[in-house]
Length: 94
Image (tube, one colour):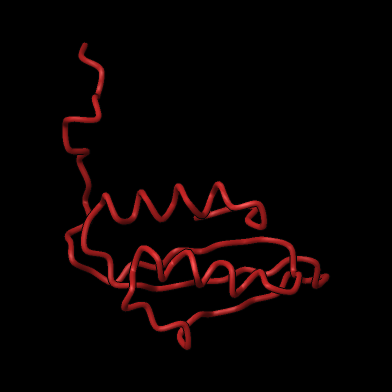
């Protein structure tokens, strides 16, 4: 059995380019939405933040953002996911 390596492309069922929704959850604090939008725009410069969907949790303590961006490759999506998951304001990325 061979181990996957970073040099082999990962198999994916997604065909690029495509519109790709990514959901990001974090505490409902000032600056959270703007911080997420800035990260998304670093990886997808053509992302239009006016389309971000915001949904507070039932008790209002958390905020879920859905950012649908134009993804051009799996590498782009992976890099965005890595940066979002390492951001101190972000709790979960789906």
